[in-house]
Image (tube, rainbow, N blue to C red; front, side, top):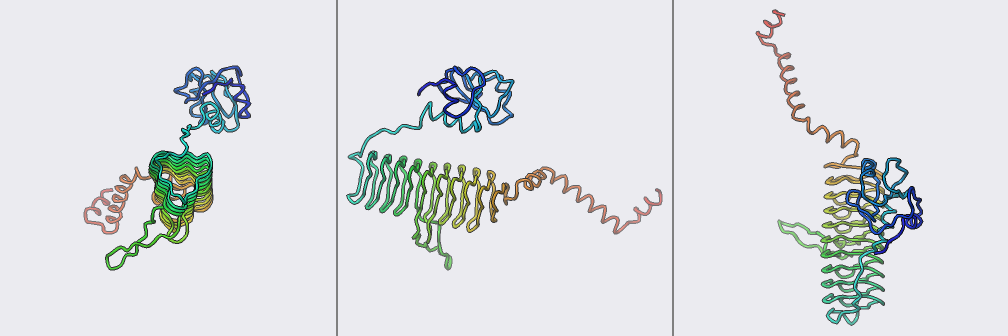
Length: 353
């Protein structure tokens, strides 16, 4: 970890300082937890009041805030600037350079690139190809004919089935499985007969897969995770699904087979998406939504079944009033029935009036 002045950090992120540029910054933290020597950030205006109480030595913001009690670093994109400073001050996780462990099992027909580090008890099967600068941790199984690009990191106990293609700078976190058989069965006379899955899985460059994910191979074509897309933990991707570039899938998403997502989609936690539908580009799906229909470009949807967000907020906002509305409807029905079939007492009441 290194330390920088606020002025140096501002120059690094192409920002400017409002306040003392000579403040020393050693680390980064949240507004509420920060102390002396820490830098924090503010992107949500509802936390403006914390600028008057934070113990941080500086805060990254998008514009000047006159009420702030600390020096400010003004940046066009405060969160991105915070990320840059985090990397500068702390760096990413360091990986121990172990070379090729004698306890790893590597096929004679496998090809391992330069500067790779393969830990104890990893298995590299026949005809697998590992690019330069890769890190393969203990317990990883790389199947026959798998291709892994340069500078990829495969964490412990990952399984990559035969024939899968992994791009450059891909990260696969622990206990995930890439290329398992798709959930494909032909049901006949009460029995479920397994369908061979002859496709594979392609993870394009700069993809990251979280822990305990299952990415199924395609039945006929490939399952593809597009360049730069990031998947959280406990995600299931069905056979033949195509996910476009730079998508974000939060934890516990499930996508059935043969569905396609465009680029730059955001899928919230615990979303379920049926198979054989098409989701456009720049779509946002709120947490716990159930998607059963195609979604055009640029839409924001929520709910189960998922509908356009503004409509959904109005519809789901009425749920709490449904019991009262139901009772009102029953009362109205009773009044209508009485008006349609008046009794003798009704006539007496009317005469008295």
